Amino acid sequence: MKTILLCIITSVFLISCSTNADFETAENLLSTAEQTAVENQYPANRANPFDLKGKKLYEALDIYCKKYDPVNSVSELTAQIRFVSENIFQSGSTTGRLIPFTDEMVEAIMDDPDNSMIVIVQNSVLQHYAKNKLISFLQQLIINRQQEFSITNNYITGYEADVLDDAVLNTEETETILTVASISRYSLYSEEDRKDKDWDILIGSKNAKPFFEINEVSLISIIALLDRLI
Image 1 (cartoon, helix red, strand yellow):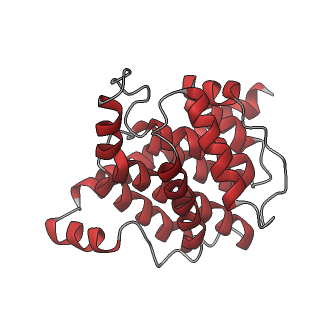
Image 2 (cartoon, rainbow, N blue to C red; image 1 turned 90 degrees about the vertical axis):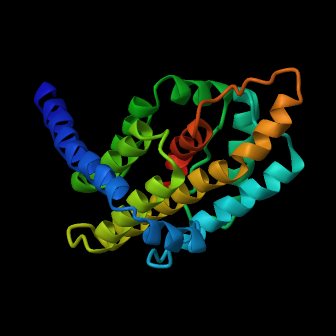
Image 3 (cartoon, rainbow, N blue to C red; image 1 turned 45 degrees about the vertical axis):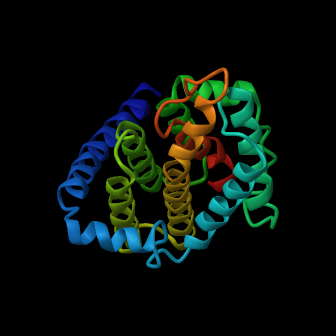
C-alpha cells in the first residue's frame, strides 16, 4: 500500500512540475496582441467541444448573482453551489449521484483544497494517467489562484488543446477533463467579472471585508462540483 501511494505521489509531483512550467509559459507568452484577442472572446473557447457546459454554469451563476447578494460566508457559498448544481445538472447527463452540498463539505474544501481535490479525483473511475493529468491541472489553478484571469485563461485553453491532442485518453475521459476545464474557465471568469461590483456591495454593508480570498469562491465551487463531473 505504501508503495502504491508513493508511486501516486511521485507521478503527481512530476506532472505538477511540468504543468507549473506550462503556467509560467502561459504568463510569459501573453503578449498585448494575444491578450486583446482573448478579451474579445472571453471566456469562451470554441476549440473545446464541451464549452457549452461551462457556459451553462456561467449562466446559472449570473442568475444567482442577480437574485442574491455576493457570497460572503460558508453557508452562502453552500447555497450558491447547490443552486448552480441543480441548474446545470438537471438534464441527468452526469453520474447521477446525489451530492449533499453541506457547510461542512465546503469548510473541508476551504481548509485543504488540494487534498480535498486529490481525494475526489483518486476515488473517480478515471484511469491512473487521466487522474494525474486532471490533478496536475487543478493543482496549478490552486497554486496560481491569485493570477489575473487573462493569464489563467491562457493556461486553461493551452491545457484544453493538450487534452484534445492526447491519444492516451479515451473518449469519455477526454470529455470529462474538458468539461472540468470549461467549468473552471467560466467559473473563474465569473468571479473576475463581478469582483468590483461585489466589492462595492460589500463595502456598503456592515461586514466590509470579504470573507473569501481572491478566486477562492470559484476554486471551492469547482472542487465541490467534481463529484458530479467525474
